[in-house]
Length: 356
Image (cartoon, rainbow, N blue to C red; front, side):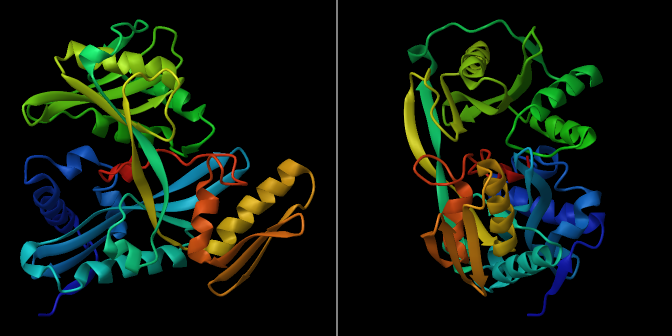
């Protein structure tokens, strides 16, 4: 069996890859191109790695580039990975591993610091992936939550001025992926495309100080509401999202967040998230962070020694971390009890929404 492997050549390859991913992940009942229009677009074709048997795409790996702003003076180049899939009759051939290795090699050549993927499977672990954190998955039956929220406006197809306002609210967040206005508009439109038996809505405040995107759909015999993303005070937007789910006849509500909000009254499950395939340039990524921390401290407290895959981090003359480049990942993730990173990465979701 000889396969033609490389970047998608034309829109036909993009469409064939998307159909394969639709079947593998959704059983053909949903659409990657509609959900993730920026990733599965002609403009992102060079970042869609595929294996072809004739005209048929039989395996694929999608990636999407984004700059991750952790602080005003700290930005990392990232490549989000998703839609890793192989046709049933080609599984076990090693083609997905080959495509992932090609994706990683290309990212390294292009100066990417981090490769991000939501998943902790053996395939990713073999390529150096590490489980670097967890999100709090919030669940509740809606009849168990207080039936109150601030007033909100509901939009299914927002006009340009409203998109501008939401983009401005997104840009006010300190930790975020950098999005140009037009890119943000495309991604927002992907959020708001409902499928059969689903609803999707953009919720805004009369005060113009944030937004939320809520989808609802069937899960078994119950209708479920999901807070996809928000900008603004989470303790304010969670009740609004739950109110929207209640209005759409949902029985249950859930979302995933880096930390549990103090106001949440439902159930919480910790969900392992964000396996990182590799630090494409570990020393450069850590160096940027250390420069930032030293600037914040006003003194050269932090340092890194890197030789090949071996790294040593030290602070104030003591060794903080000694190991290989994969051991840097918890350092980069940060969070409670994980010095020194004073941030949490954004909510990389388990269903492959790293494109968003």
